[in-house]
Length: 189
Image (cartoon, rainbow, N blue to C red; front, side, top):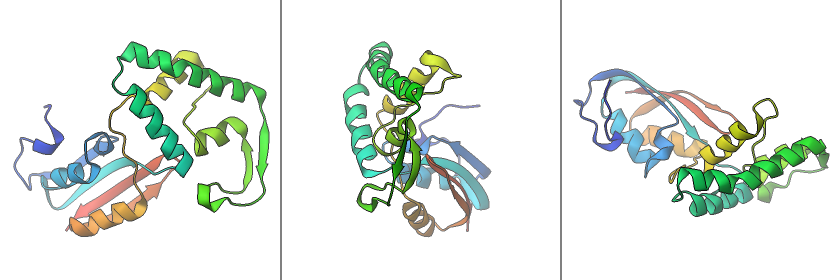
């Protein structure tokens, strides 16, 4: 085991058969450059399995960046304290069990029609206000902190990933989208 700067790895180029990066590339100053620097270490026909965050709805993107800009330089304890009202807000919304109907897609805001729990609706489209009853307050608060406190938490689109694959001579074996990100398996050609 070793610890090194992802953008200055102390390994020979073309030396690994498999590279796994779960939620790391998007926490560097530049996701694309981090992927490029790791791929250099991969042998031809080698595989890279990685997960990166996906872009959210536009108001969520704005609010997430706004909050991150205000807490990412705070100490752990101070940032956890700043998150408490957000976690309490999420808890309150959850406890009210309010369902809302969105009758039509609101494309300009990235909102899909359908029925939503109000807490999940705000979480999905406006800002991360996580709450999980079985996890309790401390762990839910830590989850909110974990999203907002890192200085870098870039979000990307499937098209960006596909463009990187072309640029870096990678074949996408799969790009699987979830609510929060993309799990990708690429092969160096």
